[in-house]
Length: 181
Image 1 (cartoon, one colour):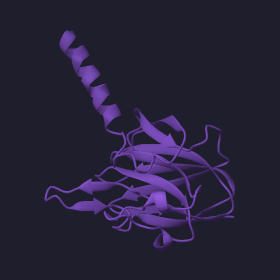
Image 2 (tube, helix red, strand yellow):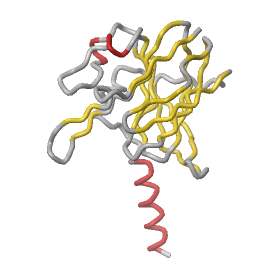
Image 3 (cartoon, one colour):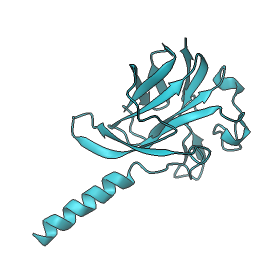
């Protein structure tokens, strides 16, 4: 009985740890609030390790499904102003996140030396919020109050490859425009 209890505790700890801050906190350190969200796995089981920053707890009038992969974000390209819930499905093998940035286009977002979006150099309030990094095969959601305008959805994870090189998902093209009318 002790072994099965220990295995259960270990499995729960690993599940929670798998969805922690992915890149040293750069995506979330500029945001004030943190909300825990309950999501489902692709198989439909409970997964409680998802976290959001800057998200609303109110019910959204619309849901936008976003599919994440290596190194793509494929959502519907527009929504209506107000509370929008992004349901992020990580179809990739790597950990991904979604950061919602108020910007005309990805090419206008400054990058740091590693190739990540440099959130500290964006205008105040440009980072609306994020669904923090979560592992492949998982689904996480976050609801954000978006005014009419242009946004960029991006993954701002930076990984260190086995050869020591940095791989910035944003630099690899993991971003997409999103227009709110």
